[in-house]
Amino acid sequence: MAHESLTHLPKIINIKIIFLNTTMPDIIILCAKFAMGKAVFDLHFTDLEKELPLRYKFIRWPNMGWWIIHLILISLVYAIGVIYL
Image 1 (tube, one colour):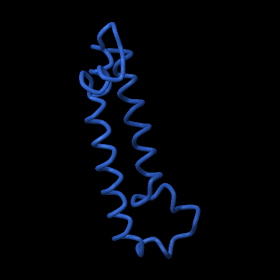
Image 2 (cartoon, rainbow, N blue to C red):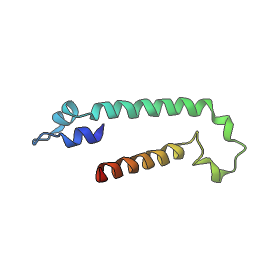
Image 3 (cartoon, rainbow, N blue to C red):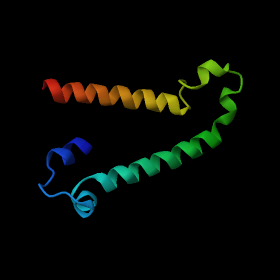
């Protein structure tokens, strides 16, 4: 989404154009929905990881580290595809 709107930016850029002519509002809404969903998910599944040692908690699935790692990897694959294709 962001790549499509950034490649078709108008020559004059200001705040109004960024929020009305790009996908920035959509990205902000999706990030807010993700944060709320993550909070509800964490409240529901906090008892699952009490037995795990601290060193495994960050990269296991219900934690934010899992999402960050996948965001980085998916962004990397997308960037490689844009560069080489």
